[in-house]
Length: 491
Image (cartoon, rainbow, N blue to C red; front, side):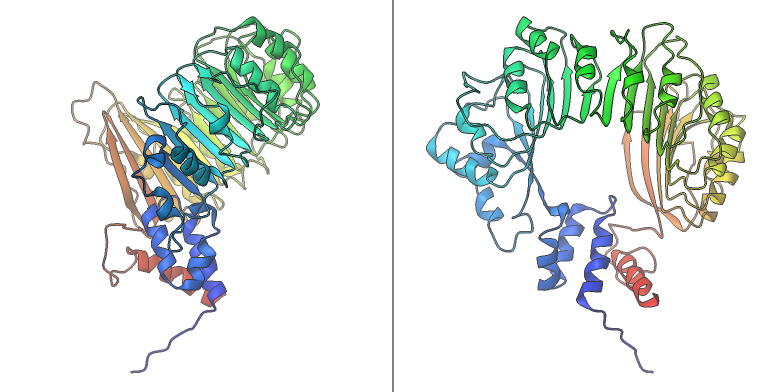
């Protein structure tokens, strides 16, 4: 008996490896191990975005005994070309001023373009010596439940990175925030502001009332800040992405003037009489829409046709609101992603007809309640969707022992990933009685529990990260790799 071998070019093997790196469900350690295939693959992976992120605790990274830098500079380390850094500031962290510490921080930050800082103490972060260690920084995100301090830094006289994206979550917007906004405005393209405590200084109010950044295309401010409507007015012709709440101001119908917006997220609450839905449907360039009902029964108008919508998310609305949207937006040729987060909506027949009419729907998120009257009609519709690849089910268990929505998912020819979150009513004594496992070829690859909920991940042809056998069919890492190779041989 003779054995036939097929030799694939290295560039084909590389494409297969790149495809594996796209799977979010694969452990990072496994992705690292792909670099051991050969030197050629290792060098190609060195430039892949998967290996450009690095996380550390600041105190450990710059301590005298730290070996971070030696490891990162090792030629055998795939992370030596990282561009994105996440730093956690420990509560006992003091100001970085020691010469050796600054040297290590400079080596760590010289190529960084994106940085996220997480702090649980008042943050003396943006002083001169620290920020100079990141000369190429273009994206900065700060998450701190305390004040952001600049420690006496004169922003007018000292160099500062040419930030394009700024994301701030802080305790309050003090004078240092408005100085920072002024410093970066010429290059700024995206800004996200979230204030834990609605306490604003006069200087900050003055800055926002006249603020203009010539290149700004994205504003995300989901809570109140003073002069927010003026800020939108100043940038109305250039904005592409907008996030805000309807509760505060907007008496001047700002939505009517955001004609170029492509992505819109609204947290709807507060005022009566705003015909928000009419204004939204008139935004002809709108491709992504997120509407979140934040505990309000106000009337925001009637649905119209969303002609160019590609991604739609509706959360916490009443069933009538969802039903009306479905009636006027069926047979959409543009809709690719749909998320309906509404426990009270149970017209699964209507929902099934709607998603089946959307021929390009790729990603679907729905909430589903299991009770004695559980309806399996939706499960029979899902396998008929030719374009559906990712399915997310949020299942709430009131009563019953089986989630019928999963009964026929195995018949789908396009579905690749299934993610299920099961939440149990506090009235249920046992949290193990519900069954919701899809049949093969889908197999469980990851599960986690938190209080009265379970989080389950399934993938077609079942990748088992615990399986070390290279002979077991359709379950090992090797099997997945082999299937991809066979696909390339076939075509």
